[in-house]
Image 1 (cartoon, rainbow, N blue to C red):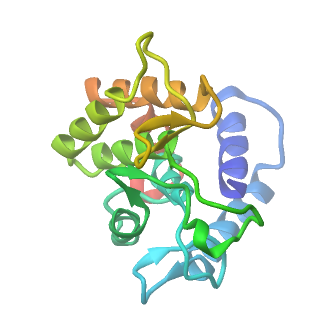
Image 2 (image 1 turned 30 degrees about the vertical axis):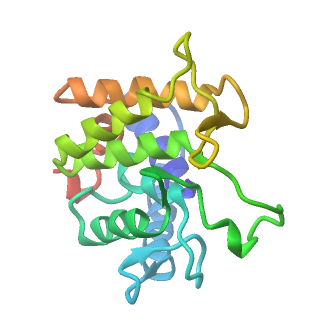
Length: 201
């Protein structure tokens, strides 16, 4: 997200004529990108990781192609998506991270985080895996209650929604993924596009 902050600031200057030290921001954006790719990717896991030097994954890594940090077809992104499928799926939905490692100091287990599951569907769309994306999207829609609302998480054991309810992140994700599935140039494609990054040309 540090990279995103610099990237969007640069684009605001270029696209909307706002003032800002663009050359300095470009330098910082490049340095952040280089450092994350060097320190945040584990070649043995063939995946980006939760933090520098860690062995654990985090579902927020699914945002990397969605914000344009790297393209969805990059081997490192494909490896990360595959690793998340192997390690963070709970009954077909995505957990935020492995709670057994206690990286946040919180006790206990938690359900699959619905927004992260929509991010996985968005990644499938960007990778051209439309059948997988639609299947996951429809399973997520099947979790809605009788008035069509979603909570923060799904508990696959109790088979009920848990956490904050209703959860805005879940509903924003529904809308984004629906647009991504029904439009040739949806929110994921738009955010992943950057004039300055050669992998999007």
